[in-house]
Image 1 (cartoon, rainbow, N blue to C red):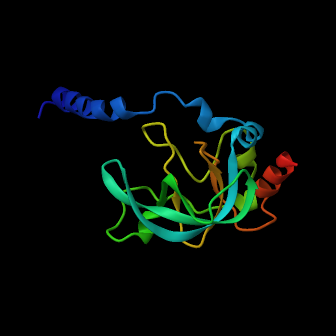
Image 2 (tube, rainbow, N blue to C red):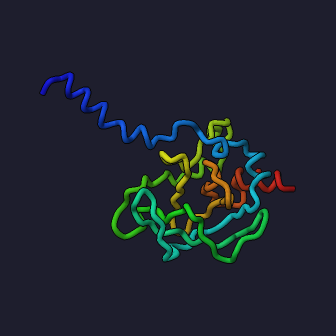
Image 3 (cartoon, rainbow, N blue to C red):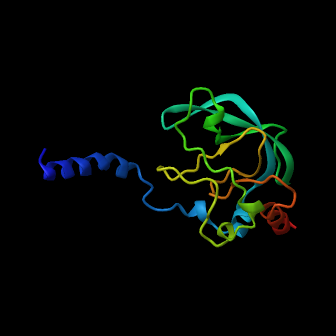
Length: 174
């Protein structure tokens, strides 16, 4: 095949992907920690119990929503059991394999890692091409959840009372 045609075909094959790309970082996904805590109505440290039985579509594929139970409600009110409309059981824990990227289950050394705090919005979740966050959770994991808000650091794994992200949020709410 003609090398020029090969390059042209490769470029055209990328057009649909670029049309779906998140062209600019949505401002709400990366506000400061202080602003995130201030503007969020409900903040819950919760345990992931398992699949809720409720299915939601993500990129035309069905995924089961994760069911949570509060360990501690830091701000606002939360039900004794709840789901997030965009929070899924980690694909490796669902029947049928995975199409979603399983995010790193790191807690960033209990959130003492400088990358979490340096303003780069480093987190265990990224945003999708539609500029939204679709976090995945592992059964039994504990997570600090900012309900009703989309933020890259709003779904962090927090396993202990001494986790710096949890203690920081508590401090900001005093």
